[in-house]
Length: 355
Image 1 (tube, helix red, strand yellow):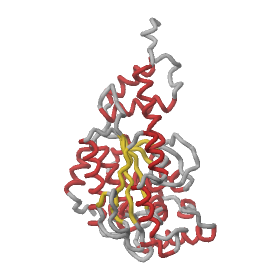
Image 2 (cartoon, rainbow, N blue to C red):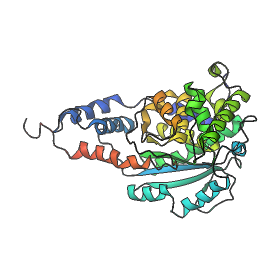
Image 3 (cartoon, rainbow, N blue to C red):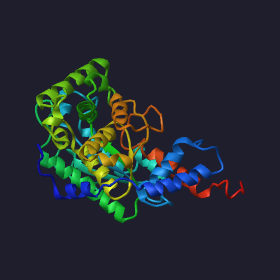
Image 4 (tube, rainbow, N blue to C red):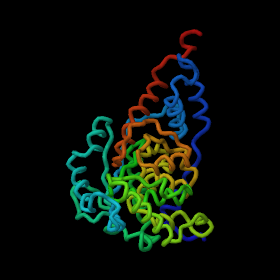
């Protein structure tokens, strides 16, 4: 079953190690001694403890952070799975470059850099968008593989390369963003394949389709899994990269690369909604150690997202009934991570009070 993968991907996986337990222990000891009842600040306490382990320091920082918005189109849109045509992907990419999308508005408030990457759209080249295009959209996964294995590896490695640059520039955290009309369909397919949950249970309304179209969408996902030979026992026959190639998307593969690359470079990964959740699942299947670097930001209204987070045993901090994508929920978690660091650095301890 084992096949060759790209040199950059192989090297990146080899660099992903467990977070530093000694630093986490030291920070936990200080957090427990802060002037509050132990555990009374809940998730904020666990955030800064894990950041210490990720960064391998007792003084974690969050001074530079980014959201990488991977963009790609999907051949399965021709099956009628979306309320919008594929052309909207390119229109939204232009909206990102003008700073007028939700992710731009939120990121400005949060002090996060927005990096828009075209890894697989049908749009023409746009100024302000990083061109890493593997090809102009995937094939229709309901009729056969969406991509080749080589295309998936190249998309993953594009994500890795971007995060390597961010790390060299001093960034400490990256949020997973996406844009691609139709991409809730491959996300649900990937989530069904990995978690084993029923397809109908995981299929949401995406961009706003009605119930009849939602049921048809579930049928298309079932057909896609069947046509591509992805059953409950796929792990005995296929690797995660093969599953991603058959029923995934180029922007999802790009986000897999961002996730793996961030872990290799000791950066926190902030998981957004259902598309980012599917990418997190595949990154975990490729390299389980990556889980220690992930933070779940919010719980999407898309049902596959809850299934992905449950499988990964990640608890979302925010419950805002969001389902936009773009990384819009993930960047909202940055202030909470910063608050957790401020708590560690600025609160007094009982020892300092003489107790």
